[in-house]
Structure formats: structure tokens, C-alpha cells
Image (tube, rainbow, N blue to C red; front, side, top):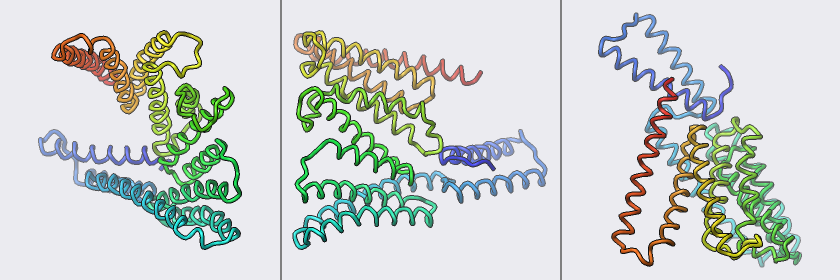
Length: 356
């Protein structure tokens, strides 16, 4: 059997389950008749296939298992947050009892030991949940390491620390298949690039959030990265890259479309806001179309949500002050119905195309 990613393995397992359910239904209705030997051979083949998929990729073989897997992901995330918080407060609770050498030794050892533990757990535990939990703790240890070493040696705060955070986050993410650390790496990189842009434009880097234009370039970069560099071997990484970059991009554009004064564009504020409003409408609509063509429900949802946000904020600007409230919400409701009609037409077109 070819080596499959977790997504492919889970899709294959779901396909087998669907085939078995359809086969049982057809047999019950008398539309399918198999000899005992053929039915047994098919069942044996599928049993062996599911066993291999579960052993190699820890796929879910029932709806109950899928729900439990989701619960385990949530619990592992909460556990990682709790352990990271425990580590943080432990450091600060007893930090004053150690001399400088002891403090430096603990800070250097913490991420190394936690990384070693995560790699070891990843080898002995096929589920990956415990290794991912240890990886998140290692990332927090690394952040504490850089931050507190800077405090100990009185190093001037710098945006370069976020670049170091991002590099370690991406390293752990790819070593241990931790999607949450891809998100952390994206956020840290966006802060780093935005802070550098701000510094080059003459502002202090810590005010990076005051100009949303700083985040547009890293957002576009991370969106196209999985299109250039194939991420199929890593479960869910492409979605994380594109969804998080989409949120960063459209949030920045939405802010600038309503408050254009921080922009570097040399135009009046009204023109800047109008340009970003048009850009928001166009790019969110293009994202919906792209999501439809790629059959990516997450991108379609993101495009729909931000298109609606751009639309309704304009409705508010245009009509809230002078239009009766019942009429305003009536217009909003009718617009939602119109959007449903359009999306339903697009859905039918897509379904027709997939059947051909």
C-alpha cells in the first residue's frame, strides 16, 4: 500500500465505511447479490486495510471515535495551555532563589529537555497527542528562554525575538506535525515583519499594531506559500496557512476601510477608505470563487464572512443614521436572502460540474 498522509488515510477509511453501508443497503433491497466467498474476500481485504490505516495513521473507524478524537484534540490543547501556564508561574514563583548561573542553566535546559521529551514520545506513541502537548510546552519554554535571558542581561527588546519564536515554532510544527504551532509561527512572523516595516518607516517597533498595512505583505506571503511548497505530507498545514493568512489580511483591510488615517498612502482619508473598501469586496469575492474552484469549504466560508462584514459595515455607514431601524434590518435581511440565492446557484453549478 502506498504511503498516505493522515488526511488521505482518513478519507480512505471513510470510503470503506461508506462502501460497506451502501453494500449492506443494496443487499437488503435485493439489488446486489454476492457469493459467500466474494463477500468474505471483500470484507477480509477491507478489515486488513482498515487495520493498516489505523496502525500507521491512527485513523478513526467510527463516528464515536471521530468525536473522541476531536475531544482529545481539545483536551490536549487545554492541557498544553495549563502546563505552559504552570511552567510560567513556576519560573516566576521561585526565580529569585537562583543565582544568575542557575537561572541561565534552567532557561537553556527547559526547551532542550522538553524537545527531547517530545521527540521521544513521538516515537513511542502513534496517536501523536502527547507529543504535540510536549511540543507546545517546549515552544512556551523557548519563548520564556528568550524573554527572560533578555531580562537577565538587560538586552534591549527587539522585534528579532519574534523571528526566533517563529523559527522554533515552525521547526516544532514540522518535526511533530503540530498545526497550532504553524499558527503561532504565522502570528510571530507577521509581528516581526510588521515591526520591521514600522521601524523602516520611522516608528518604534512596539507600536506595530497601529498600522494594519504592515500585516498585508506577510498575509499574502503565507497564503501563497502552500501553493508553492507542497504541504500534502503534513496534515492540515495548508488550511492553517491559508485560513490564518486570510484572517490577518481581511482584518487589516476591514480596519483600513473604516479608519484610513494610519495608512501610508498619500491620499485623503476618504479616498483611502474607499479604496480599501473596494479591495475588500473584490478580494473576498475572489476568495469565494477560488474556494469553490478548489472545493475548499474553509476558504469559501472565510470569503463569505468577510464579504458580509464589508457589505454590512457599508450599509451601516450609508443608512443607519437616517433610515428607520425596521427598514434598515429589512434591507439587511433581503440582502441575506439574495446572497443565499446566489450561493445556492453556485452550489448547483458546482454539483453539476462534479457529476460530469
